[in-house]
Length: 457
Image 1 (tube, rainbow, N blue to C red):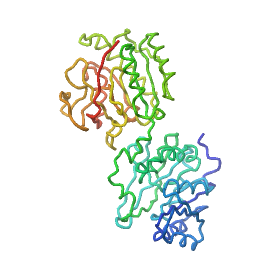
Image 2: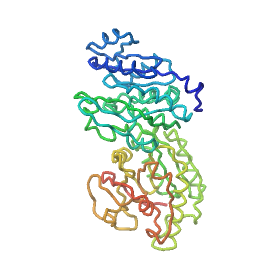
Image 3: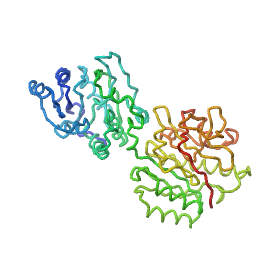
Image 4: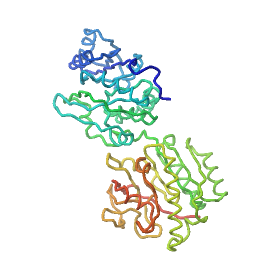
């Protein structure tokens, strides 16, 4: 799937310089490309609606020049892709530069592994700031937390095209506030989610700091906007225990909740051992508007109906603990999206719950929960930083010491390398609290996501 059809030393590189009224910087960008130890096969200027001397500079230096009226960096870059043929692409902003060995050292990295689709680097700032920015070594989950691959990274055309990153970006491009300075992050994430890898090369991308930097202009943009989280496809995982009376209310919520159904991978894990209930679920699924639904039958290993028996009985309580531990350990292998929303089948959150939970994230947060009142307790199933459960309703977003799994959004990374267990000697055997205790991660409670905790059979 990821095989390059020619040896790495035969790969050709195209540099695509996009320019909007940056003619005063353009010559430096062109010279930095022409002075490469191994020059690119192609150099093209995409002039996007400039009203300055951009055209004259480009024509004077005999480089390929195309005038477009996109008024958008993403579309301008795509025009460059359409008008080049090389195997590797480098999108150079007209106010930036490439260090002399950038292409030579970067191209060599593609030969290290045939799954490498992106080669990025550290950045040397110049202009109003002369500091160096060091990028971390690549990991997929790190990239979902924070963008550390600049727009001028080298990318295999095959990776860019096969991921349909530009096509997916254009589909949602009507929201101009969404993109601002972060469309490259979205593109890189789409490529990585298709299975490609990235590699950090040893040379530097030179990033000019000046008063008109788009990044500066969007300094107040929220993390939700920067990470383009409104475009995320999320997994919605729901363990079903066979609550017949609760299902009409719960299914109504699923029908009306506002996260786009085409951006949800819905997993219904049916552990009811109830043929009548299973038929009801499948009938609903056939008629629902969710395009991606997986229904799995799962034997939780405990007597039927345990979920709604009296949990003041310690034997019942232990059965439930063991059952949910098995359910969530089984769930882990089914998660393929960067975020998973877990909703238990007796919890009804607000219709805009998914959006509110995603808006609770920043680079440090890995878990965001709604406020779920206890069903048999007089407190919420969320722990304060003092280790005690919340009793009174709060406001906004607050850091917690752990949450129940009634309504929670998690980053995929929190699940992939961790185990759920129900050891009575640790956190009273509660799988969810022991999970948070072991992780010691930053989790938050969003009080705007006030849930109903109902019971029906």
